[in-house]
Length: 181
Image (tube, rainbow, N blue to C red):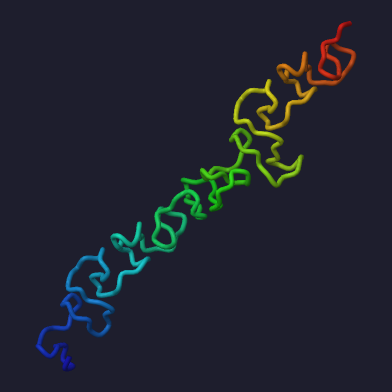
């Protein structure tokens, strides 16, 4: 350049002329924003708002990890440790179904088929069992408690009766056997 905005061949210095000039990090001579050099003559980079084919899954030009495109220009997905707003209930980024968040990005809950670990009996969310069915006559009730005499549910093959108490003065006595009196 000779200082008057003209290069040595008297062509105007401009992005897109195929030559890297002052202020440019690249110049491939085209306006394609999906290749390695943008139309602003800057090297393509994650976060520039252009999806670079074969390199990025997405590029929304922001740092918001709750939308469809997360850090590293990757599409948001369950298990990436980013909570996608309105899509996932949770996302802890691990492969455990026995903590507070299952691998399908739903909050752990009684009836999901997984026994939640790390809680003590009496704590909210504690499960003694979880068989993921609505049957109260098997060994695990719908409240994720082990079937027991006195729980008001007849545990088939184990109890003769279960009236919800362990009194000995009614038709169902304390060990959930029918009274013969």
